[in-house]
Structures are given as structure tokens and as C-alpha cells.
Image (cartoon, rainbow, N blue to C red; front, side):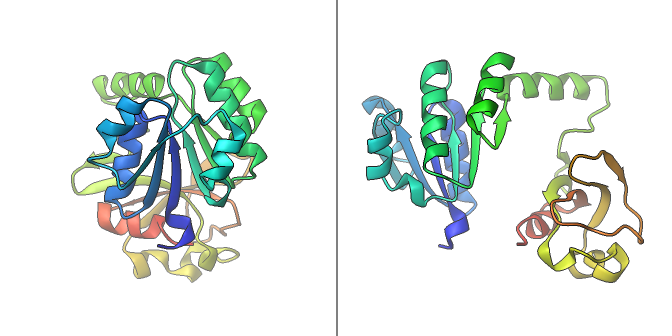
Length: 218
């Protein structure tokens, strides 16, 4: 396993467990952590690495080697205090990428202040996506059908500083860059003359296999 394929998932309720199991199916090495012995036991049949621990305890996280993970997900649900404490501990361990689940706007704002790199609202986002789907304006849903997807990703290193035409991404990877967003900017339509910069966000269209391969580029 490459180091970038290792993820720490804390909180193994339905949301956290789904993340951990899906990452495992995608070939990532995942360490799942939960404070409840019953939850850990239930997950042991579907996850390779799962341990019972109080993740609000910074010493416990250090003993688990949490600081060695490049990515972490705080999937704790209703216990807002625990969610915040765990996120703070992971930030203190200088984990490069931390995703944290929030259940309210206030909770999300605190997680951002604490240092979470990305705050997600699963229940709210699913409601928004479902509402858009009901009126036929599903723009933010990645899967268009089983053979065509939109994936939001960052510009690959090999293309930074080049125009899309010069980079030849469509020819190399059989995907189409639909639009580009510069850091702090807004999404604009991509053209052959669009120059990709480090940190740009791309919306890429193609088959699931091709788009996922492109999104996995360094």
C-alpha cells in the first residue's frame, strides 16, 4: 500500500462504516475506530482493521499511530463535543487531510474553526441532491447513469502550467474537462486554451473507470 492509500475513520455508525467499507473495496487500507465494543465487533467481519478506543483521548490516538495517516475522517454523529475534540486532536497531530461530519451549520462552523479541511453534511446534502433530482436539475450528483459520471477533482501535476490542448488529457485518459475553478474563483467553461494552475478544481466527464483513473492521478 502506498501511504496515500491509508485512511483513518473515526466513528463507525452507518455513515462512517459505509466510508470505511467502500474505501476498503476501492483498495485503500483503512483503520476504523469506535468507542463502542458492540460496534467494533459488528464491523470486524467487514473491515480488516478495526479497534475500540476513545478517540477524544489524544494519547490513545498517538498509540494507534494516527499521526502517520495522510487522511482521516471524523464520522461521529450526534455527539458534537466528541466530534470537535477528535477533530482538534487530529489537527494537533498534523494529519494533512481531515474530513469531518457535521449535523448543524453551527457544528460545521466550529469544525472549520478547529481546523477540519473539509466539513460535510451528509443528511443535508442528500436532501438537496434528492430535491434537485425530483425536479430534474441534478447538477451536483456525480453519477449521470451507470456508464457516465462527473467527478470533481484537482488538476494533475503533469498538466499544471499547460493549456488543456497541450496537456492532451482527453487523448491520454479519454475524459473531458468540462469546467475549471481557480482557487478563490468561480467555475468557468473549459476551453483548449484554458491554462491549468496548481490547486485548480476540475469537473471531469467520462466513463466511471476512466474518470476515476484520472481523479487518482497525483
